[in-house]
Figure 1 (cartoon, rainbow, N blue to C red):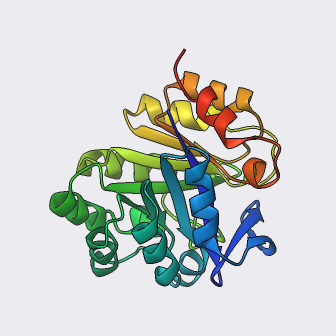
Figure 2: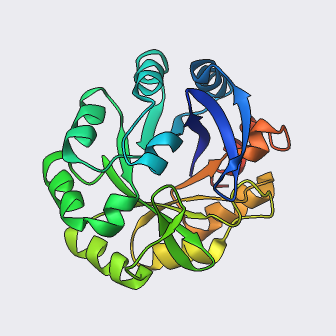
Length: 239
């Protein structure tokens, strides 16, 4: 199971949010490239970049940092946040991003996901499903989605999506442990799952791995030093 250190970009800085709240952003660095290099130097094989400005405003805003990290860091990189058009998705993939992750568009415009899958294949396109109190939230995790989760999953299955990044927003940044039931539910639908939200310890990583998840996103625990990246990577490896 791959460990994805989270690099959340807000106004050109690397930050962490608690439960998706922008008014509680904690700035960890003014140099996201240095942060990315640091995680790779510690053994990261993949990074999870989120353009928080893009997620909230509907248009990717931190492209300069995303491209700079892609150019200078040797790791698999997936990018989400504000990817809501074919042209933006195409541009990111053309620049060497390994996977784009669509949240709002995956819920509201499954036809766009279908078009992207047709052009780029199943491994380069993923959907981000964020739950707040068992309801899907979109547009930077501030708006409750109209479609129910079951309907969204039916649409994504029908169009052939494989990868889902799922996060329990109420656990994100809280260090209270991951929502394993969320992961198991997505895995039971035959998706390849990358789970985020609430990871605090190496034991949390082990429990996620045992669900059969393909990946685990870790943020606050790494930035706060509660969990060391080499320990997380080791916990993610099958015994």
